[in-house]
Length: 106
Image 1 (cartoon, one colour):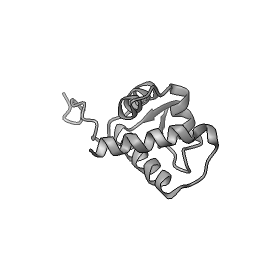
Image 2: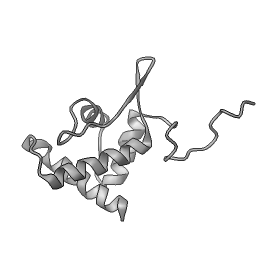
Image 3: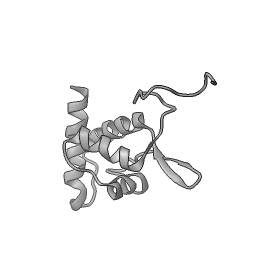
Image 4: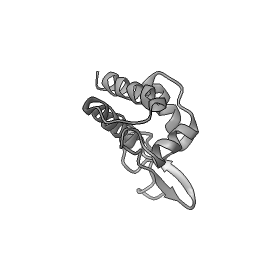
């Protein structure tokens, strides 16, 4: 068997990719609120407070690096602290992301 095959599930491994549904589950767990798959896609496409969730496209499929989920939460929290404006309907999500990043840093 090749030594290059990844046998660990370490979330910090920059080579590990997860599907959008798993990214939604990771975000839900971090924020303590349910995050849907369409929300994850929206955060990748439009962003939150000017911060986009990085994605990787492979053969037409969208993947997220679990390490990028934490980076996204921290960047969204920093943007919220700077007071960057955004549509009112998304403010609650940005505030939840900011709270989640604070809890994650614990």
